Image (cartoon, rainbow, N blue to C red; front, side, top):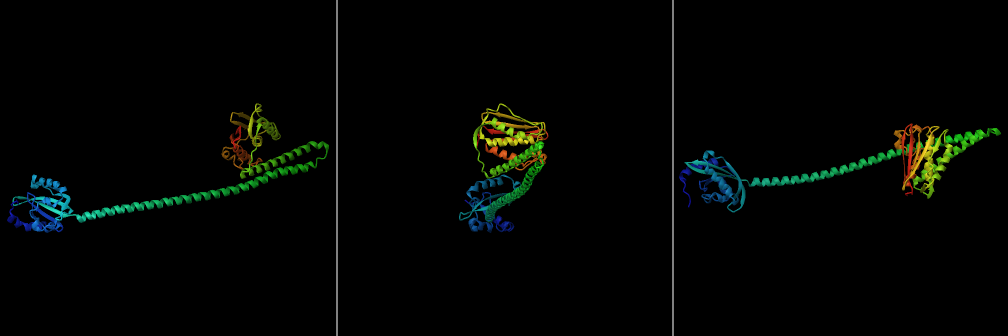
Length: 415
């Protein structure tokens, strides 16, 4: 049964209401207290697909989705439970239902008002389909834009990574070039130093030999035999020195080309020690002596005997050369089940701390021995041979207090 309304009275003011409330694109629906539609503007009828006559007396809930009817009902009840003066505009975003049953998003605004002592509800309905569509499009555009940003960022990161890699390669190449240039400069310097060294080291003994030969020719008398013997010894020593230099160069060439062949045999360390000391005795300065232990006669090694002899000779020779007169060169020997250790100790001029890191470098000579004859390759050769046989050479030194060289060599060679 349709509710009765004061149609005539409402009609008088209806035109005024429509004129004041009709807004383009906004549907205006007037409800009575039972939520039946008693008036609507053209935008509302067009929005929901009803003719004006069909629209009147429809219940409000027909126009909206079932999912929002309870929410809408509760909001309307609140309007009538409160006084008109206390009412505030209430907005809802819900889905409207077209006559064709298609749903579309709407924004609904509710207001209560009184007319001729009767309460009515004005419902403003805005179709926000275009807005939602734009929001969806905007959301899709944002998502697409974000994807493009992510893709572009990835491409930029890959480009940056590639540039960084190329830069690293360039830096590495520059480092390699700089290293190559530095090595070339060092090699050129080495060649220059080597030629200067060879020239000096050969020229000095050759001059001594030539001088002694000239003087020998002058000592013809029998009572001059002592002077002849002196110069013969000078000649012998100088020839031996030149022979040692040539042997060092030959040994160095073999080490560089990898043509070194080690001849392993079992030998007594005492025998080698006596031969080395005997051969170096002629080099001793006045008052110098060499002390070595007596208990080494039973110590045996399975090693290259010539390399052990060469290394000992080199270290003892240096100890003699860089120590003063009336000094003692001490040799200590110990052996366990695996390693034999030899220490050559002197109290000579020592090695400056600044030079110690380079002492085994080829052709290097410490600053305090530059005026002393020597090639700077003996220690390099000895270290290379000992390491090839599985051993090591180390030292401790303090300038003006002496040096201790330590050889650690396996009892059995490790090739």
